[in-house]
Image 1 (cartoon, one colour):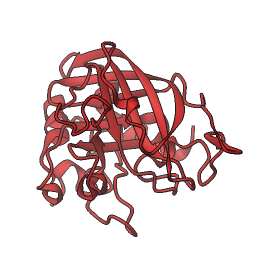
Image 2 (cartoon, helix red, strand yellow):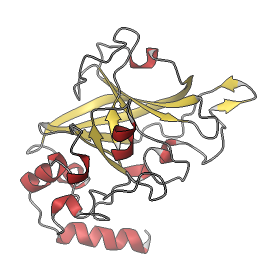
Image 3 (cartoon, rainbow, N blue to C red):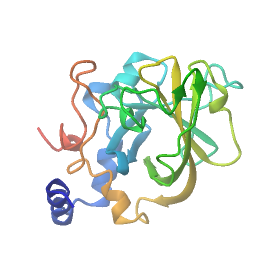
Image 4 (tube, rainbow, N blue to C red):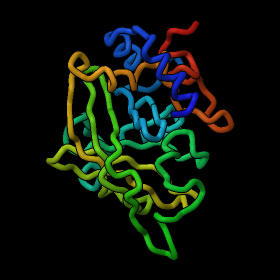
Length: 237
């Protein structure tokens, strides 16, 4: 275990922030994003991803703020239906900043390399994240998904966001450098807990006093992070 992880674990053990306070930090209206509506947060611990979820994946203001729900499908071209966490096909999108750090950049297997997603004119799959878990949270609770694979599609493929009866998560981000294609990370729902019944381990993934968020790249979309590397969930002046 590295020194950074040891220090982090000490902070978590020493922290006594209540579940209610963490819930409020997650759902608070960040001052820099007044035009947007927050749905919650997404955490992918294995990749160091922690992002707020807003409501506009089809506008610059939304994608510059973090992740956003994506809901324009073949059957709902305007995205009139608001997706609900833990139900049906929940679509989520964020930038790939090709820096291996910001937004959903860490969902690409090899930074700045098309392979294995696009090789010699062929769209391919990847299983490198299979079994890793994703947590979504809103005011009601925490939703745990398990990654089952990645596929590659063209930028105008809306079928990936079609409705489904089985609860699942569909994460969409650009491939880089071939940005006309999208990496689609697929996950299945495995558990739903209220805030009070969720494990402390899962709750701690959203402790913004301790956790670092990764929504902003200073050279592109400068802003105040909501995590410990910013205003710490509103606890810093």
